Length: 153
Image (cartoon, rainbow, N blue to C red):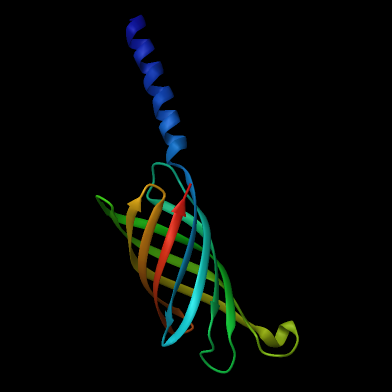
């Protein structure tokens, strides 16, 4: 009886330790095309233990689609749907706002809400480092293709 209780205690300690080890922060940088115009993107987020899910803050600087360049800031969620070896397929969704570089006060520059979702592939290269490719679409109408690199710690 004591041996069984001891083994159960060891299992609980090992599981608790491994759960903490799987919770990881990450930073990501990417670039691509928004329709036919370039953009750059930065993300900072957290991957949760024992679930294929992460939340992140997203910032992007976009070349002008109409008259002015603009910046976006939002919060996103990424869900990994397939994991085979070092390759993961994910769905991501983002909600945020956009701010134009047009002259004038803040009310004139605020472009409103943005919403996007897309599918992507992530490939782990070495421990901590991965590359990703994402295609997403959203409101207002756009089509974004992106390549990026992610570091996890």
